Image 1 (spheres, helix red, strand yellow):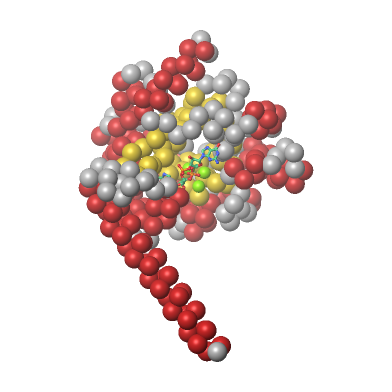
Image 2 (spheres, helix red, strand yellow):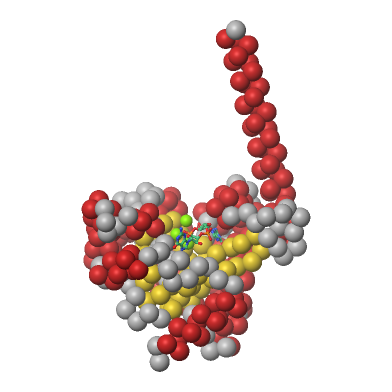
Length: 282
Ligand code: C2E
Ligand code: MG
Ligand code: MG
Ligand code: MG
């Protein structure tokens, strides 16, 4: 009868739920262990200047290779998990250290590039986040221009005065601050003015069907126009085709990042690509 059916369904769901919870717990425990065991790696995805074709910066993207856990887990899965606990703070510290070290190693090889790191909300509310960023740069002999930060709109919207003030100070020192995945979060263009940011990274969903779809093109063009009016630099995310790259160029988008140019790369692969692109432009 219906009652029994309902109960069965309940049991089914609760079993599925506790299985999921168990999985989350296992994954969290593994993540924690992995931090200690050095199972994380940063890949670097170049950002290209669309006018000159040269690499001007890159984004550090985290990869997790669990030693015992078999296949790799996407950051789209494990970052949200880590964000539920303090683990993201520890991971973020590792990323910051690693990125600073990499910029320095590249500088010693004559590769002068900014590395942008992704920052989670939970990291920003740590009262010493920016002091640590300053200290990390300093201890590696870096300037504020060497490490950029990427924040989503939702983080900025929810940021309290202390965080906004700290961001303003970073900006005044010359730190490049990007709004990541722009257009899919809170998205009030009028808010843009209040944020101390330098770059807008337009979410790849806007580019996906532009320029063939009028609706997407209209949005894309509106974002670029407003961004430029506010003196922001624009980065197109997820550029996968020549047509998309041409379209971005037409719109006077400054920078592009995407599989058309390069996937996130290991340090060695990045250096090889960098050598190739800078040779081609001399
Ligand atoms: P994100 O910051 O928006 O990074 C861009 C994502 O798009 C990356 O996914 C990148 O590999 C992918 N991508 C780049 N070009 C293309 C393209 O042409 N087509 C498509 N389809 N995708 C492209 P990834 O590496 O899987 O990272 C996913 C998200 O995980 C990131 O999105 C970011 O939010 C988060 N994440 C990654 N590393 C870190 C980190 O160190 N700290 C924090 N807090 N979050 C991170
Ligand atoms: Mg990002
Ligand atoms: Mg993004
Ligand atoms: Mg994202």
